[in-house]
Length: 320
Image (tube, rainbow, N blue to C red):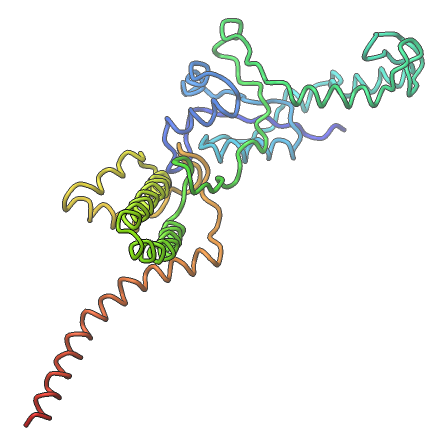
């Protein structure tokens, strides 16, 4: 008895917290198709995205499509499971068992099965391995949209196409970072400014113009890096990176900077990519150090006036 076969069915519903635009974009990327064909999948009519799948392969399709935001389901493919007609794999196996001949993949010469072609002299396995390498290196060309039916399901293999986490890139406006990594990277940027301040002090002793030039370069570099990590933090929330400019608006900027530290990121994939990877121990330590900076300032602001008052009272007491 043949093992059961499955199909992946989609009727246009979305996973929780997934937006329609995001899901369409993800499906178009997975299936290597245009948005016009993807739009036809959201008509509300159940569509079999893939048929005649084994259980393991069906689970891979199910996981990949759900991560993309599409609420798909796995159903038993009755047409494949109950068919009395041999499957394609069974037909190929039967033909191979009945005919012990082979065809050369290069010159199409038919001969008995052998490692080497008797006509052109190639080693069959090496030739096939080389052709596979060339096929992987060649760019994938999308089929012509006019030749395909707009109601036909996509044919691309989507199993395990989505990465689990996004790639971390400090010097980029693409990607996503969470709240803890945002604090950690900001603290690392501030720590990198300490050598710049020492260099500024030494250069100012030699030339005020040189010191000013070094400080200006450091400030510009800090602003640029701040833009990079700020935009990635907004992407994690699901917001456009252009909203970072709100930090320059009086009053609104201070509130918006606080929101960037409080609002959690989107669960799973959003339109800016997969979620960021888990935070490392170093990132967590830097984040805690960043939180200690304002706390230390508050304690100093309270303690210094008290200490100064104590010193003044002690001096007055000694004079008496």
